[in-house]
Length: 378
Image (cartoon, rainbow, N blue to C red; front, side, top):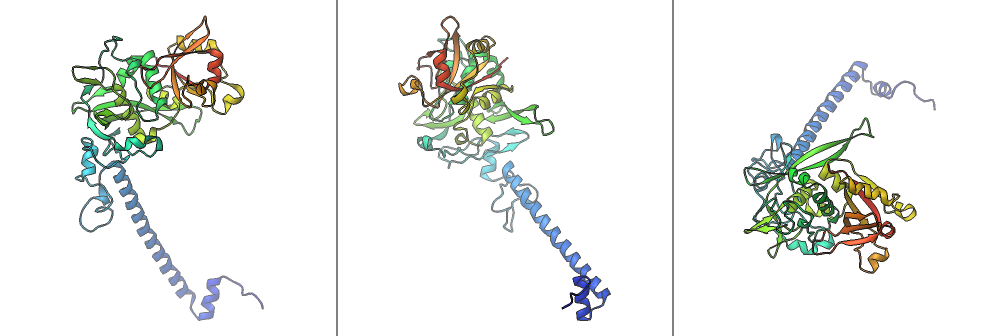
């Protein structure tokens, strides 16, 4: 059979006795209908996108405003008068609120949690009992033992697995306490603004990094279990007031990531860069260390100490010092000093000042720690 020549439309027109003019009119009507359908779909998509954006920002604006008629405006969106919206813009919830990791943004600042963050990690099962309570205190209190407002002995890790972050905080408290003092600002309404930094790589120049400042607003309400802070503990105390700087910064770090459960586990590089706004340098690595170690000498480490760098070291769970109980495996410590004559390194555990410092010969330190992160603090 001979194949019909010409287009399919022409063939159908000829078979059905339809004129070419009628065929053109028919195609025009189909095109108009298609354009109308696409416009309607685009409007619905735009509305849905706006609703999602409004829900994230904590308000119901534009097409997502609350009102009669059902749909996103009445079911899913957060209206300006809803309890969640009020909590997000005023104070944290009362104790006993259901755990979630909800946080909102407004005017470039992260607001306080609308409700307690969730705890998804099995290691923090006990933390599910935590409820927010206000802790009476101020950011900084002069210690009786050390005579300083900011000291590494203020740092004491709780049941949250953020040793990498608290080690970074303790190391900065040792090398440049003024950096921490500048991070916290008290607001007129009794809340605090904590300044942290985030890395943003330029898309057109990948080798250059831009540091973006985040001002995060937090209150002095923290997860508490049986009257004690569940996570980072307070520092010094005097006259019924507790020292809050560690707790405030940890809460801001959690809020920046969407919840306390989101800061379980991490690296010293992320923490040091967020706290200092400066690039860090990593020596070694979990897989790298097996073959080449830290790839640095003792004199290089000592030079970092002399220049006031903050330093966080990660322990290898399979090392002999872990097996004999000297170190905790897969844990972050901060370096407090070196002894050039003996070629030893002294470290501390962020679990608290009641844990004695540990001094290790350099050759054993290289084996026991698979990663060392350093960052300038001045």
